[in-house]
Length: 279
Image 1 (cartoon, rainbow, N blue to C red):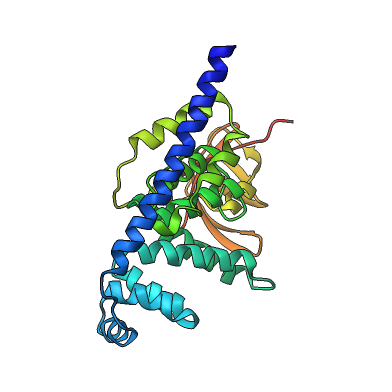
Image 2 (image 1 turned 135 degrees about the vertical axis):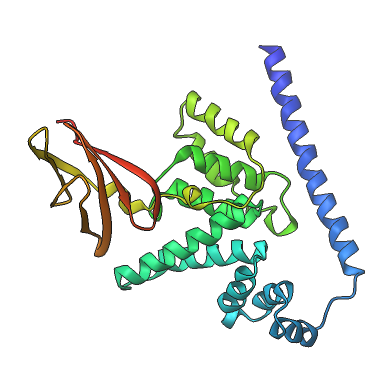
């Protein structure tokens, strides 16, 4: 018992020392940057208007009224920091928008998730923290605690100055409280395997509304089975539109078995398997 207490005390001291090292490093960085002449607002604006992505990213910080526009211009040129900032802004707006039409809110979410995913997979701390938050929350995308841990932990590793206090550590730790040992082990494996890269469509988080896509029953014969999905009856090969939360979703029925159906969804990568809920 005494050995365990000494070990815990040692860990606490070590953690305390690490925190002080971060603070000292930050102060040193501020001192160094303070010696570098800063560009004037006029210089930044001229460069931004000329199409310089880094300047557009800086203009977003100086011109709050048009920040989203500046971030989007830089993000569209592949400027990763701007992609992360734009994704976070759009998703925050989607969360706080009251009375917006479903299609407008969905468009905000889709674009925000796209930019956050692009940034996060390229190593951007803001994008990683944003993905950790939305995976944990489960309101904008399908909840995934393992991914919440992964992105939160990646965001918290070697944070930049602006992210020392606002990393994804909170999302990671909140996810841990709901995870079992196997989930934590898988999350750690994903963190260790992460390599910054350009993501493809299959890596986009699944929208939260996908949880409301239900297989309600199967009818017909073995040669011609029919699946009832959110009130629409479809056979293999059929294309249909279902409505979820006021949004029109186009689905393509790929296969129908005795107790399940496989579909693809327009705008969503991969194949989705739907099963009849157990009584």
